[in-house]
Length: 481
Image 1: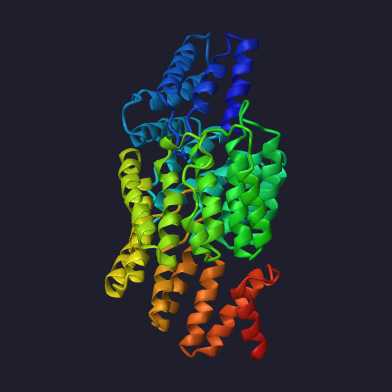
Image 2 (image 1 turned 180 degrees about the vertical axis):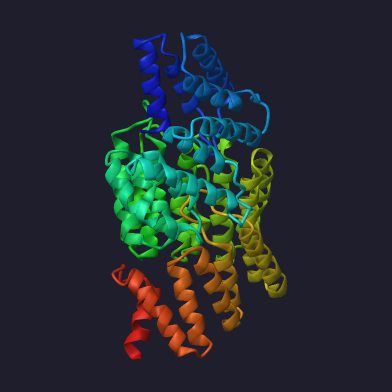
């Protein structure tokens, strides 16, 4: 089930039983997406409030039903014009009250785990809230081992490099619980991606995309179809399956059906072509990507997603030595950063990381290596204070990896190796970070460590496409040992 599907089901219940109070509650609840960057717009918010008023007016209700209604009312009571964080904080307190009033109710516990997780800051590296949410969701599975919400919220709670191993067993069992639900099939790949388990991620995202075809969002192609493709392309690229990744690019660029407007859809449309060019060091191709593709998509609503293409343009142009192209794209990145941070400090920061990264390489190509290294260090340090959003399998190119690349270009091989190792903690089994670590160790004279990283690269991508030069180098090094 998805939010759209749940809302439609509750609306069908209203048609068949207009006096069912909890059907109205369900519509209002389905319009709240705590972990997504898409709060209800003005019309949706007003509809949610109206649904709750109807829920309160319909017939006699049990204490539990009243508590459920009040929990959702706590979100809408804050008003549409407040910051979404305030609505979610009230939502969390509402569900905490329900859970404490009905401690034996697994649904209340699951909803509290979700609501509590929604209050976590991506800048908080203690993960206190995430751990509590995961532990709370785990109590649901103790009572009902196949509870989909318990599985789902554990995966979200532990979708961090340090925590991901805690969710691996849950991730591997989730797909069997809901084998035809697109998002349920996709969710395990959040953990597979964190752990660099690319074959498992590929398998589940293929299944998710296929299932999403059968679950459109009304007359539009579901966001879940696009979302699975971004994770799929990312996984293919880490295994050097470039031909398969290109198929994903071409599929996305060939879509002619209307697409569900959503941050996940926008992210995928921009990210997949950018990844395909940048991960393969195709700088000129990255510089030539066309922003706002397809032009029919409402890009003005997603400045941080539009910025992805301009980041690819800026970095690609800088690495290709196109000074004018780099400066043009950098200017647009600055404008989009300002737009993005007006609605989301998080996304504004992500655009700034991209802007700094591209600026650093522009400075480097213009010969100011000292300033370039300082700028690149600033980008990497800023990235380290935050976390990737669930909408993405990973940064388009991690700033820490780009810092290591720059150190390598400056022949600072040991320092480059150190940065690649740090990058691999955050993004396990990334092809280019593994290669960079191996190559840096080799150039630093540490043949044993180079061999270890080259072997790790072969273990990850040994069956990849033969024309990936970096893969050829790894095989040649190991063959010569």
